[in-house]
Length: 211
Length: 338
Image 1 (cartoon, each protein chain N blue to C red):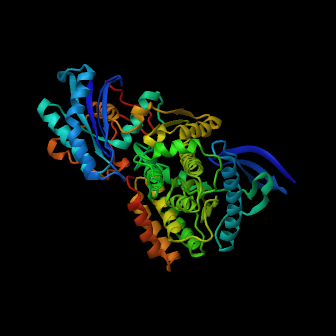
Image 2: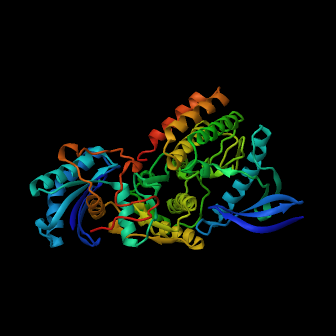
Image 3: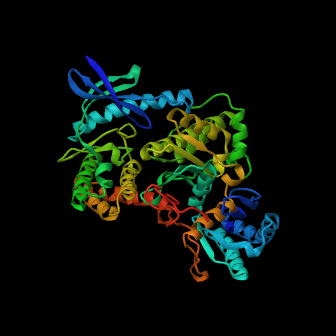
C-alpha cells in the first residue's frame, strides 16, 4: 500500500521521505525525537505539532488555499503521509541572483494574497519562511503548518507578517519594495483585519530590541 | 598588531588587550551589581565611569604591552543601553586622543560571534547568543551578518533574572536559578513558544508566576523553566543551522555559560554532526577582549571613526555592520588578520 523510496531531506524537526501512497506520489514526514528535550516535553511537542499540522492543512484547504492533501496520519508512528507537490520553494526563487525583479514581485504578491486568505479564515501559519511555501507556477502552496494556530490573536497574525519581512530581508536586496507589494496584496485579501495586523507587525518589529 | 578594546553595553565594564594572533594579553572586568532589583542604566553608567580608569590601568599593566605598541582603540558602539555605551565611548575617545590612536567602532553582537569564531577555528559558524538583553541566532550570510531568529519579547537572561528576583534572589538571578534547578525533581509542563526561528518568553513567565502562586517548589520550577526555555533556544539554533545548512555552532553571552544549556546544545548538535564551541566563561560573557579582537579585524579592514562621528548606536542593527574582513558571500574567502 505504501512504499518508501529515498530520504528527501532532514529538516530541523522531521525527516521527509519520498514515498508512494496507493500508487500516488507522496512524501512521508516522520517527526524526530529530540534527545536534548526532556522526554515529556518532547513527546508533548511532537504529538501537538503533528495534530496541529494535520488539522490546519485540512482546514486551510477547506478555506480554498493550496496545501498538500493528507493521505495518511499515523499517530503511533508520528508519521504524516502527504500529497507530493511539485513546486519550487520560495526561498529558491527569492534568493536567485539571476531572477528578475518582476518574478519576485509576482511571487510575493501571490504570497500576500494567500496569507490574507489564510488569516481571513482565522488560521495563522507560525513558521512562515520561504522554505515552507512552494511556488506552483500560478499560485503558492503552504507547507508545514505545525506551529500555526486555529485560534490566533493579533500577535500570531502579526508574527506571520513579521516573519515574512525578516525572511525577505535575509534573502533579497529589494526586500523593502517586495514587502510593500506583499502587504498591499495581503490587505486586499484580508480587508477587515489587515490594518490592525500590520500595525501589530510593526509593533513586534519595534519590540525586538536589537535586531 | 595590538588593540585595546572597551566594552560597556550593559552591566559590564571591561577592558581587553588582544594581539593579531587573537591572544588575549589581558582582560580587566568589573560588573555593576545593583543593591536590589534589576539594572538601572544610569547607575550602571556611573559605575562604569568610576571603574574604567582603574580597569584601563590594570589591563595595560598586566598585558605587558607598551602604549606605543597599541595600534588602535576599539569600543562597543552598540547595541546596548545608551548611558552605559556613552561611558565606554567617552573613555575610548579620551584614550584615542591622549595616545593619538585611531578609534575603531565595533558592534557588540558581531564581536561575540567573531571572538568565538577565531577561538574555535571554525570557518563560518552560526552563533547562539543568549545573554540578559539579547537572545538571537546570528550568522554571516549573503555578505552581511544576519539575525536569523530572536526573542520577540524578553531577553532570556532578563526573563530568568525577573523570575529569580520574584522568588527572592538577588541580581543576577540566573546563576541562583541554575543552583536551584540542580535540586529540582519534578518537571512541570509549561508553555513552549517557538514561532519559526523566533521565541518568546512572556507566556512562560506568566505561567511560571502562576505555578509559584500554586505553591510549586522553587527548585522544581527552576528546573522546569530551564528545561523549557533552553529547549526553545536549542530548537531555534537547530532551525537556523538547518536553514543555512551549516555544521558549526558557537555560543556567546552570559546565559550561554549555563552548564545545562551547554549540555542540551551538545545533545542537539551531536546527532546532526554539528560541531559546537563554547568560549571560556570570561570570553563568553560581555568582555573587552572580544571588542579588541573585532577591532583588530575592523582596523585591518580600514574601518575607523573620527571622534566627532563616534556616536554610540544603542539600537544598531546587526545587518548594518560592514564586514570587510569577511569577503565574499557566506565567507568564501576572508581578510586574514595581520
